[in-house]
Image 1 (tube, helix red, strand yellow):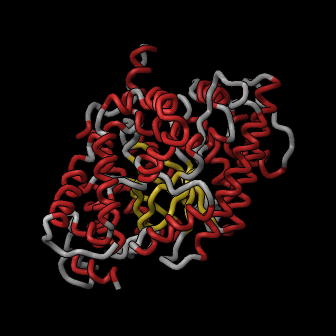
Image 2: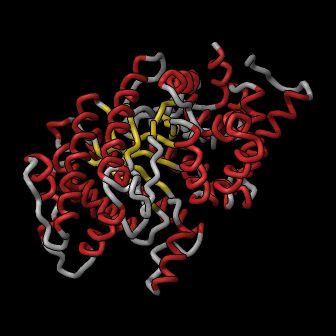
Amino acid sequence: MMLRTCQVLYSRAGPSAGTWQPLSFDGGAFHLKGTRELMRALLVLRLCAWPPLVTHGLALQAWSQRLLGSRLSGAFLRASIYGQFVAGETSEEVRSCVQQLQTLGLRPLLAVPTEEEPDSAVKTGEAWYEGNLNAMLRCVDLSRGLLETPGPTGNILMQLKVTALTSTRLCKELTSWIRRPGASLELSPERLAEAMDSGRDLHVSCLNTEQNQHLQASLSRLQRVVQHARAQRVRLLVDAEYTSLNPALCLLVAALAMRWNSPREDGPWVWNTYQAYLKDTHERLRRDAEAADKAGLAFGVKLVRGAYLDKEREVAQLQGTKDPTQPDYEATSRSYSRCLELMLTHVSQRGPMCHLMVASHNEESVCQATKRMWELGIPLDGPVCFGQLLGMCDHVSLALGQAGYAVYKSIPYGSLEEVIPYLIRRAQENRSVLRGARRERELLSQELRRRLLGRGLRVPH
């Protein structure tokens, strides 16, 4: 078996196996990938590290379509950026991509690419949100169907973007109300959960008639997605967004958690995302974990560093408000480490009632997680998993997967027209991640030099 060639890349350890041995992220696992895959990865990561391409990506895409025509422009994108970061357009293409990942010990985390445009009547109307609901329901079915393919078993996970089902304007309105001193209990998770379950009309005094109707429709959409996901045994990881939206998103997640993360439901079915680059994240995470424990609810967390740092600072400066972000990357890393330690401790104490995704491209964070899992006796394929983006950080993903850890790749899918704007906006939000891929580019170059010069182990494509 090809996979056995990589068993030398790791040393699995546990509390009863003597000294813990760290994983090696030296790119040795690239032997499992074909030369063409590595060449494309190196080319695309170098392109994405070029700031003008990221900044003017949408304009450059439009220009290439005018110059080359839609067919040639589309072919170039499919052979490069789209092919690197997207699973495909059809369910068959997605399934093929996932099967390739599974042979490498990796698992899918499907994401529906949606981009709300606040100034567009088409992309903010109820019909658009209903269309997104149908796309989410199909994604649940696709995620469940992928389990039928050979490969590692375990939790089926899927990303859920709440602002695909409810407007950012409503979320901002709710956030501003939540942040007021002595905010009304009419916006409690209990009241929203009761409205979701009963389907009865909900009236919130801070909203006008149209906003109340939209809130009711949004709650119904969220309930339908989670209900269907629960029936299909697909766990939903809710994306975090900007701080102007997050309090409202957390309120909605808390309402869903009350209904779907109870022990009788074998939860958690709804996980929230915590962004370590925000100053208040550790305290919020501690408070939420303790509240879930006290309420007897299962607790699911995706822990990320965060993608909106530049934008958050810009907004704070424009509005004359306090900067909510950590002062620098080192402070963000310390925050991530503290949050990681907090959650791993909770996992070790609560077992299957507490789940964690360590969503990080940072080798030190991954090493910390694997070492603490060993020290705390958390099984490799238990309530803790790891997550990275499709097409990036493969030297970490492959090493983890081959060592037996549960590793998920975040996988967008859809047509070029749907996905390319989504990818460009994610790239603009993740500039630091793209710039930080320098080590991966160096490891890719090193492996390609070995192959082209005829040195080192070669695995057939």
